[in-house]
Image (cartoon, rainbow, N blue to C red; front, side, top):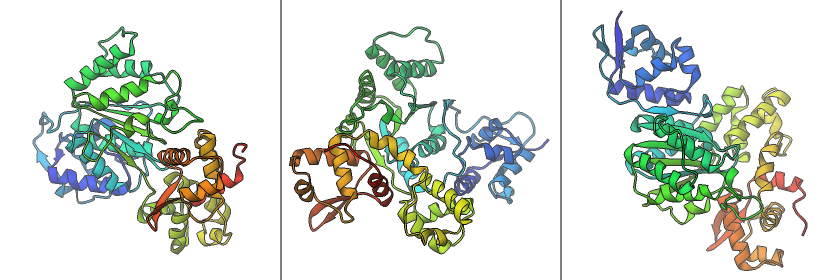
Length: 424
């Protein structure tokens, strides 16, 4: 039976097509199911190995490429050629399926340059709940997996101890050769660093905010979880050939003093989707009145999860008519409220006060304005609390007449005004 493999130029064509679909290279279940093939065959396709002609054609057609002849290089029957790119050992843990991922081309290109081109040791993806940090981390790892010998993705959603995470990482990177691990965190970290030096590894830790402390300024570790700080510090500072990518709703304190545009530790704060990308969500949800879609994106700040939630509400309550929904002239939160609840519970009392006063005023406020309103706070206290709120991605900052002013976005304002925040 005839077999085919993709040319280098052909792979670039397929790569552009799958990005338009919002699919990963090898982790989108819909792709290999639509192509009536397997994930293993799809991986062979991307590694430059020959696969059966029928599978090759179906893989191309699944992403809308009917002219598969321009993608293929014919090979002879028999044993396929060796792959052009070596395969990596991978463990994706609880990484979600990110079918329907839209946009973020600019962010993905920047992150790939940082990790593959600049060889950064630690990269943090930061942003508000629902902004797409987890999905972007999966897309990123999928996109650059061929550049690494090992890829491991782990969620910290249920706040595992650093000892447990280190044991998993060491065992995976050591091909399960370790059966007993030293109790001392420092020695476990040394074993991990040794593996990161010997091999090109990509580590992803998702939802790092779960190991950070609530009720205090952003970025401080919970009692018993300080070992994560040591993990991040050693990966950031010691020489090795690997990269740790972490996602978090707030920036860990160890990153603040170590990051920089020319350093090997960097962070990227995610903003909302661009309007053209956000509109794909509305099309998928079957919304009408596209001339009003831009207003909806602006109100909900292009937050992918929020847009999905409000789109489902509009479809169910207004038969998909965005214009009718906007006639209400109000912001509907729905399930967004439950998403914002936990981040706001994490705030210190000083941060809660600031959020309350920013939400109560339509116009942005300066520190001077806030000092007049919150009489029992000092300039230094307010400055530190505002910086902490920025690290949590809960406030917006703008320069006006050579003075910094702060405000909150519409959805956050609506949420805060519904809450009873603290006692002061």
